[in-house]
Length: 168
Ligand code: DQA
Image (tube, rainbow, N blue to C red; front, side, top):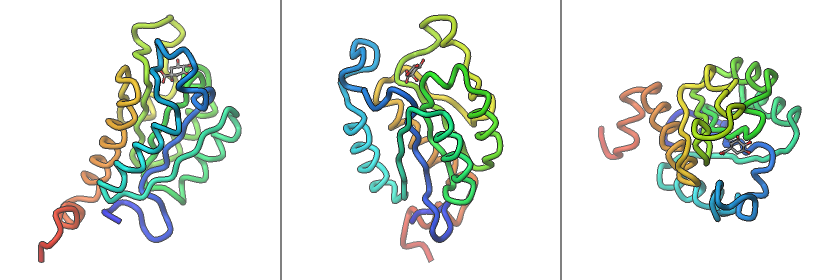
């Protein structure tokens, strides 16, 4: 474990919101050809390279997502999330995220700012450290890198030493 998580915790909880289980066949001209399983596999490999423990989950249900974020308070050091359509509608998910005090990174495959007006509003961006949008499946990869860096920054020099390895 690089840093961030104390015993029994994961470093980063990765949350996939509604309809992201359909990636690959769902409007591929907008969301790309990668399935959610492809993205999860790539994130697992990346986490191993970064020496981070991650956990990933997907739900189409708002309440399940709220409960997952509440539970992350004791279980995860950081959250990386794509709440999909709930990004634009869910005060409940925003409130759940506001209670989580570790790093929070929002990602979207598509560039919401170039799409319909309703997608240009994110209720969750203001309670996140930052957002990465518009890079397709790479948004998740960039997002995991951002969460990793935020944990390094928060945990300071001790963490950097562990990452480099070998320092006394
Ligand atoms: C999305 C953008 C949302 O507007 C949309 O509802 C999604 C996917 C994205 O990753 O581009 O389901 O979050």
